[in-house]
Length: 133
Image (cartoon, rainbow, N blue to C red; front, side, top):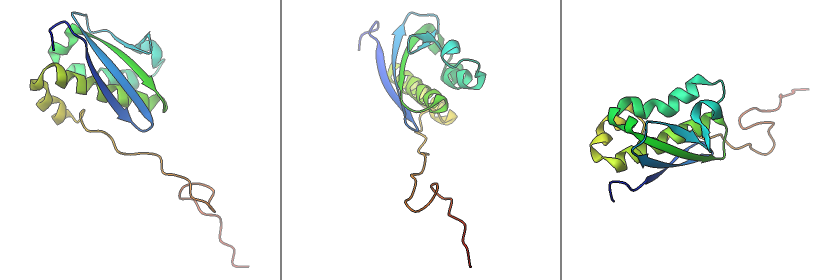
C-alpha cells in the first residue's frame, strides 16, 4: 500500500458492523455516519471514550482521520464495533501496533450475542410459572 492510500478495516460487536477508512495526514478526527463522534453518540461520553480508546494506546494514530460507517445493532454494539474496526485498521497501518492493541484487548471480537427466544417460553430463559393445582 502507498503512503497516501486509505486503509480499510471491519469491526463487529453484537449485531453491529463497522467499516472504517483511515485517512493519513489528518488531525485525529473521527466521523461516524458523516457526523462527528461526539454528536453521533449524543450525550454518552463512555461510548465516545470507547471509540477513541485505540487512539489513546497508539499515540501516532492521532495523525490520521477516521471515517466510520456503522449499521445494525444498538448504540453500545455500534461503539464496540467502531473500536474493533479502528484497532484492526491501526494494525494494517503499522504491524508494530498489534502488540499494544492486543494487550489492551481491542483486537478480540466480543463473542457475546443476545440469546434467542425459545418457543413455549416468554423470553430466552424465563419460564412460565409452574402451577401444582
